[in-house]
Amino acid sequence: MTKFVLASHNPGKLKEMSAILEDLGVEVVLPSQVGVDAEVEETGETFEANALLKAKAVCQAAGLPAIADDSGLCVDALGGAPGVYTARYGGEGLTDAQRYTLLLNALRGQTNRAAHFVSVVACAFPNGDTLTAEGRCDGTIAFAPMGTEGFGYDPVFFVPELRKTFAQMDGAEKASISHRGRALQAFCKELATYLGK
Image 1 (tube, rainbow, N blue to C red):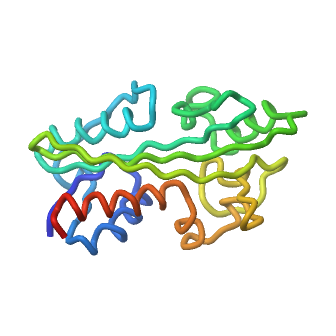
Image 2: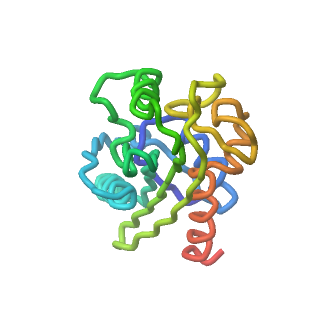
Image 3: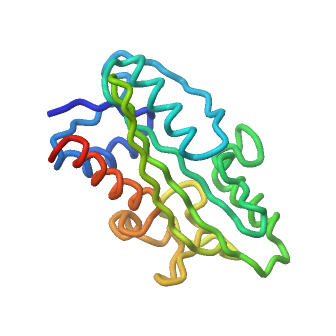
């Protein structure tokens, strides 16, 4: 098994990445499991730039290939905001519910509710090589939160073809159409080619 370090402390992301990458003979571990404590400031202006910043920093610190992702919600009526600031929308210390309530308030009276989630997965190798893959899921912003699954903006991100918000879907259903699921699928193809599998 080849060891890759996940540039995140999120156990949910570790589980998701591990399930997808184990078929390629890749074991995904948390930074703490290889004695690395790298907090990377996301100063990039794009999702790809932020994902690469994180992957390169953890790769350098661990001396092992590192995987990172950066994702966010882009709302048409808000000129693409919150975008790369999705996790920090409204400032530090807000709960998920406070963030999506702020978003709903910003869209009050708006008829254009179109939005999309973007996710970029990046991998950095000790030899300097990098791989990136992007996934996107189009939807709309609901008028009120619905569902209890997921996290973040899931209760207000509505997918018209399934007639559900992300928070109304089970894990498998969400993974099959989500931005992160699509980015990971694309990334697996890139990685398989890179590893010659």
